[in-house]
Image (cartoon, rainbow, N blue to C red):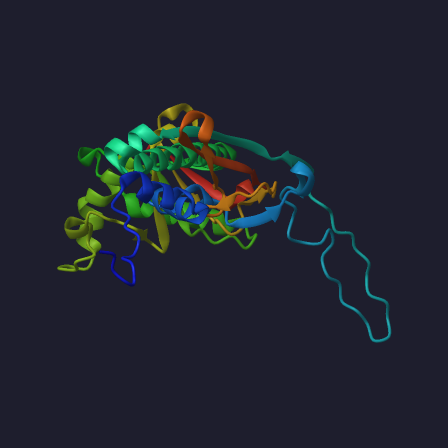
Length: 309
């Protein structure tokens, strides 16, 4: 005997559950964005944004903040003195498209439900994040040339490193250029972060019994007004880091992107995703791509502390 009204459709079938998810491209984009943002730091180093229509963008590198002549006293009724203002050196940057596809088969979904879908999205997000951060972080680190040696290796307690003083002196060096730079980020690799967070002098200056203290939380995010951004050493030039970088992210440079269309979903600022049914292969094709170029216009907005590790 049939019942009325009929029972609602069930999503217990693993193939139906995964297919329902994959048929919603925004679900896939949102999940990849969630995974990528757990470790993604490149976009926080270059906060400027630009549109690279046509696949390239022109820009000016650092130009002096002042006019070519100093102001002069103007007598009543007299003409103002004329001066010139110079443009910075011109540059041209081209966007680079990169990405990859993977297939999730119906067999894998039938046997393991959403697990192969989740694993595919996680690996695509991780690969995109690694490529983005490697490109941006390496450019930022290699573009900054002004430097000073650390007082001592931050890892060597026997030499009494003065970590906070090293950082404050680097901030002062950026301000001394008188270009309006104000550092807001400290870029270091994961191992140097460990030295910094466990330094006894730094720890002694922190608020005691504060649950945000790294001894409780395992996180150390701000020092001397600087957001601390740790990144794998592999993202840095040469793959081995003995330096720390102080950066004014608002003036260092920008990231330019190009909108290619094509029905892609935005998974954050730089990653795009697309999901396609592959009936010929009995599966789903998942794609991630990026299409951007990072540009450093003001290398003076950064300072390098060398020999920290």
